Length: 390
Image 1 (cartoon, one colour):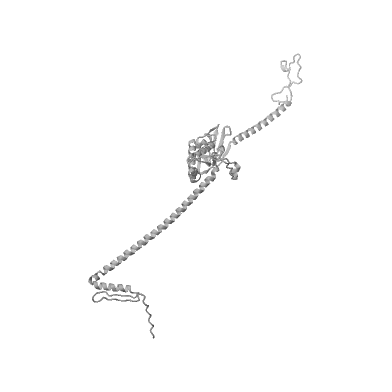
Image 2 (cartoon, rainbow, N blue to C red):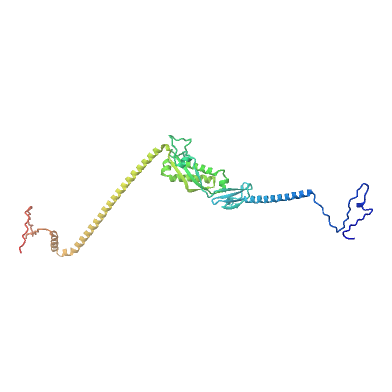
């Protein structure tokens, strides 16, 4: 039998071909051998819609996976942050710093953290200079007036409800304004130990302002010792800030202090200042004249002393020379005193009569008595001798 022939065997005991009563026999009964191919079957309509739904679900799942991957990348990328060159940052893990002291500070540069609420980044301007202005001791000035450089009207009297002032050591009052510059030295203590540390710095400044004013008179604080007043104020601020551990440091040159007397009595203070200037000018003038007189008197005294020393030296030298001369002539005098006297007399008379017009020499009498000399005063002058004729 060939492979394409179909064998139909119908045995009496074959259940597939037994037809009982009321049973309809099948239209075709085919028996396939072991090597026969499967017959082709057509897909029903519900299989096509199921396939389309499956493809749609696959596309949706792909989009969801892409979106989730993007969200994960975005989640981690959102944790990248930068710390500026004059900043430090503190990373918080569920509200608590992740380190202690310097270890908790993130230096300038690029950093990463888990996004909020796992991590939170607090940036602190550590290298930036902060400024605080005293809120007590000065009269009210609007922002517009300050920018324009204008002063508000002083009014007839000082109003304690609006005008700030401080009490001085001599019982006066004055206006004081202080501008203080500082930088943060301990960011952790400055940010986490206090709600608003800058307010505490301002309170310390106001306290120091009243404390220093009470130790200076109004004249010293406003004119005579401004540097000392500023130093006392800064020492007090530093003491209070260190005691409270505010985590800030001050620049000694970063403090501007302005202290003036009450504006209502400015004219009186100006009059006192003018009087003091006149007093100082008069004292300086008198001191200058005294110095000039003293210098002149000192110069004259030095001249007199120098002249006296010179005369003394000259007289001593002359006396010494005369002494030496007489000592040198002593042997000659001892050998013949009369001859020595005659020679000295002759020498002396020659010196005395060197420029005399008329000379008279009176010799002694033989008996040793002196001769009488009579001089006619107001006599007629001698006529000049006539020139000799040649």
